[in-house]
Image (cartoon, rainbow over all chains, first blue to last red; front, side):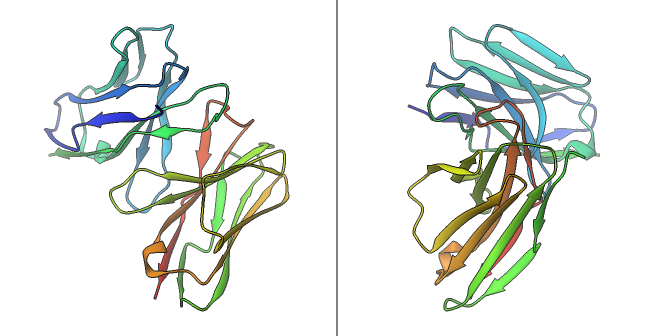
Length: 113
Length: 113
C-alpha cells in the first residue's frame, strides 16, 4: 500500500517548546521521506528530508528521526517559534514505479507566543 | 531561480465556463505535476508529465484536461466543472520524475459557482 499515516492532526506548542509530528508508512519501496511546510495561501515547500539508510538528520532547529524497522519517522522542531505556525506534511517517494509523492494527512501546528 | 509561477492566483468560474490554469518554471526541470488540494487536506496528485509526455493520470474526470506545450509550461484546461471541484490547484516541478525535491507554485484558488 502507498498510504502514509500522520499524527497528530493538530498541535499547539508554547514558544520555545519542542514540536513533534509522527508518520508511519506501509510501502517498503519508499526510499525518500521529505517533510513539507505549508503556510496559508501558499504552496508546500520542502523543509527537510531523509533517506532510510540514515537514522537521523538535523538541519538547524529541525530534526528527522527515522526508524526503518518500525516503518516510522518523525519531525522534531526545537525551540518552536510563532513563525513555525503552519501545516506540515510528511511524504514518501519511491524511485521506481509510480515515482510521485504520497503525502500524509497533515499536521496543523500553532506556536503560541 | 527556484520558482514555479502559477496564474491566475484566484479564479471564479461558472459551471458552463471554459478556463485554463497556467504554470511555468525555468529551472530546466523535466517533470511537472498538477495537484488538487481541498481545505485541511494534503495535496492530491492529478497528473504527471515527464519530458512533456503524460506519465500519470490519477483517474481524473475528463472535465480536467492537462497540456504540456513545452518543457517550461504546463496548462490545465477546465470545462463544465462542478462546485465540488472548488479547491487550490497546485503545480509542481522536479528535475526528473520521482526526483527527490519537488518545487511547488503558490497555487490557483478556484471557485466554481
